[in-house]
Image (cartoon, one colour):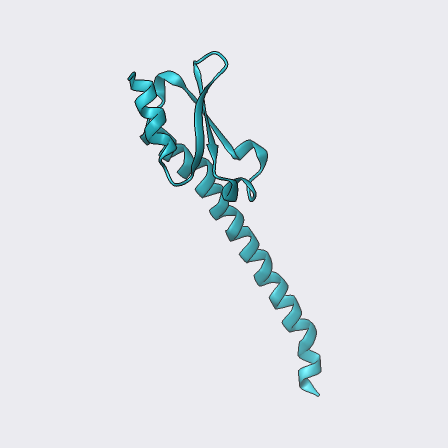
Length: 100
């Protein structure tokens, strides 16, 4: 079994990976994320692409952390900030009612 085949097999065993395969020219490797992750991601982030020469399990984990986990963390942080602003607005709006 070639080194690339071993790496592909190992990558497909990662909890967040649905599939991994060479694409067209065999110089590009595509890693497809699990459906539960793809549902909450833009299409551009639901698949990770790698050059075959640099394809390793570590590279996939690093790309996942950088491109997916950090994106979702930033999205959550933004959503929480917007919720906090909305909650403050709602409290301010209801404050005059509380004074009666």
